[in-house]
Length: 163
View (cartoon, rainbow, N blue to C red):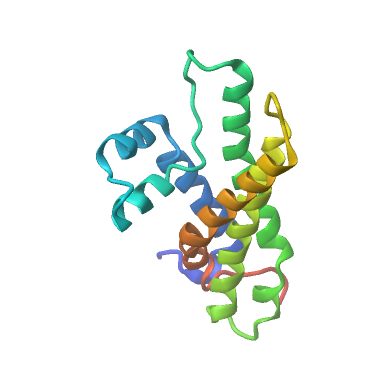
């Protein structure tokens, strides 16, 4: 018997989707491919480059602090997605599973997670400043806005807890 939506947790499915997005599209291999092959002056190329925003790396030419901050951003994005999926009430207040509120709740969770992950990791940079923190949060929220619909689709129809 196949496992359907009846057994899927909305926060769990959204967190798993965020983890897959970060692991696949944030990888150094995809990020290098996107920067080399996707034209950022076209809509498709811009989106392919945007997918690589939560970039994580193990590059030995970067400083240890830069590597940790980049990896922390990717880790915080997944963790904060899980936190916001549990905290946002849209899906919990819906009368039936699979309603549009679950979709928007998952999407919003990813927008908030992207913004806060970027904001928090900016504090660990060598010369943190308030304007750089605001810019980073804007980039993270922009990433969440254009990629978060995938998280929204993953959470759609999931079980939220006690009935």
